[in-house]
Amino acid sequence: MPQSIRRANPPISESVFEMFSMKNRLVILTGASGGIAHEVARGLAEAGANLALWYHKNPSAKTLAEELISKYGVKAKAYQVDVRHYEEVESAVAAALADFDGKLHCMIANAGIPAKAGGLDQSLEAFHDVVDTDFNGAYYCARAAGFVFRKQGFGSLIFTASMSGHIVNVPQQQAAYNAAKAGVIHLSKSLAVEWADFARVNSVSPGYIDTAISGDCPFEMKEAWFRAIPMHRDADPRELKGIYLYLASDASSYTTGSDFIVDGGFCCP
Image (cartoon, rainbow, N blue to C red; front, side, top):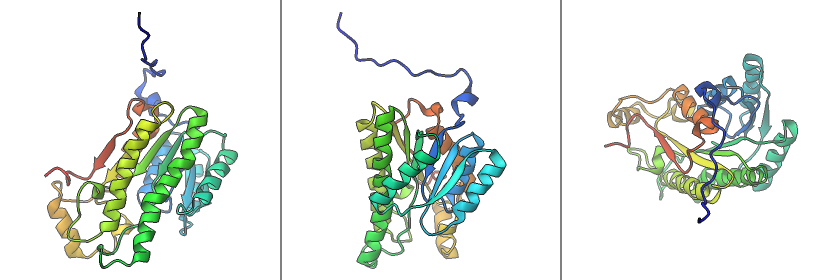
């Protein structure tokens, strides 16, 4: 009889609520100063997760940590980290492991910045800032977490990508952002294959979300977006909590290498 390479299935709960439970599990969430991250953090904390909240300049993550502790009874702490520098990322992962229980269950590489001009009108400095934050920073977070996951034998990595990694947005021009997010999606798929023995890797590609990052966009530009979206609206960031919880939890134990587009149907036509 030839020997099968089939691996055993993981333990699977009969309860769907237990499958989604994140009780006492540590999640590192980058770019935790506002927007999508605040709602994702609240959703994970409600499911029982402990949160290490990373921010770069805006210290609102500290207030969020206090809220999560008070409202959900979980552990939470804010860390100032510039994801453009691998040494800072590596040190912050080590600090979170020391401050919590020594195991990392999920890394959400969410930090990102927009591009404010097209490929020729954007300065080289601004181009490098977008790529260094949105792509290199995402990889640095994945790398630092990946070494931990491989040692532990388990883990979930979630990238925040964008529908802009699938399409070219109009009317705004943002070639650097689009290219960086396309790279994140393919990086996610590549790492999913490389890490299949010990961790799962997926990405979420949000469409237009009603957050501060789009708050200064002109009325005419937003109307152009709404005309292009089959649902004719942008999303409340709370509408993204479910997909991140799914990917962070055991509910997605057979999900890896996938990109989840949450865009109101924008990419469909």
